[in-house]
Image (cartoon, rainbow, N blue to C red; front, side):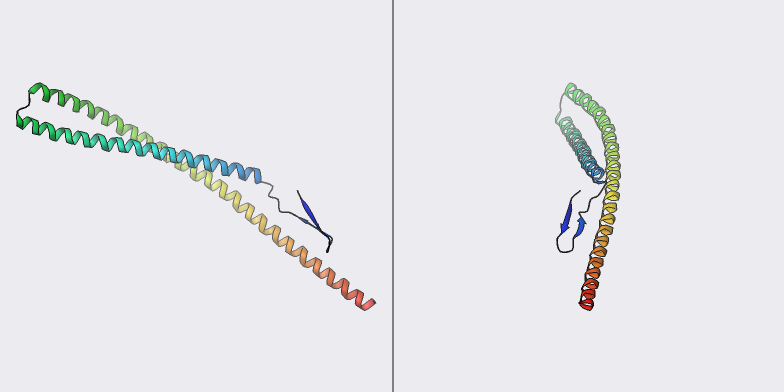
Length: 161
């Protein structure tokens, strides 16, 4: 804690010190960590959704290509292989949908954790702001009292002098 001695008024002014500053720094750090976790979760979900869109496009194009090949007289063995491949891709699609649901849940949990960390930081910042405001009011009150004392002392010297 640092104090400044004013040579004119010989009054000690204490610098504002927020006693919960270490806790505020911790809350700010936790909020940053939660924000990064939320960004990672959102990015992972986005990647899963992009993979699903790509797979859906491939399946649709594959179905159209097989229909065209059937009209052109493609061999039954080739069509059977394409049908088996598509069936396996539908299994992969179902697994990917489940993974997307899991990633969405993780993103929602990360969003809740971030919101909670943000609230906790905001509470401490509001407390700091209130304490700083009270400190400023006390400083203004002390300065006014010092001015009043100086005025009265000068007045007394004029009368007695």
